[in-house]
Length: 100
Image 1 (cartoon, rainbow, N blue to C red):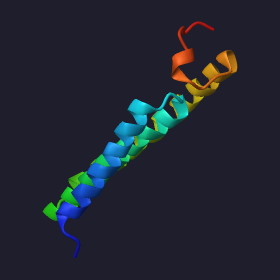
Image 2: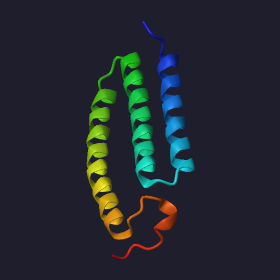
Image 3: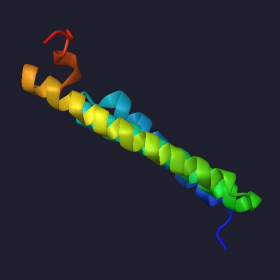
Image 4: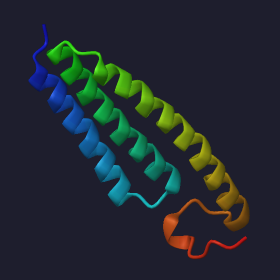
């Protein structure tokens, strides 16, 4: 059986990769993927705590987080496509105004 610490370390590493990707990259799609990595790191820790405590509430919460992440992905990608059609760039620094 894998100890809880290993899952928490994996979750921490994945979350830090997401934070690093979000703070250092200028491409909005890479930033979006980094946010998804951070959400999945939280899911890993929730499932590991839920398994360790023998409680299903963590698993149920993960399903809600996955649902919210899917809705965020759909709306976020639609906004990215709309911005790309108007500005023809995917870099955050070049997007200074939000009017169409």
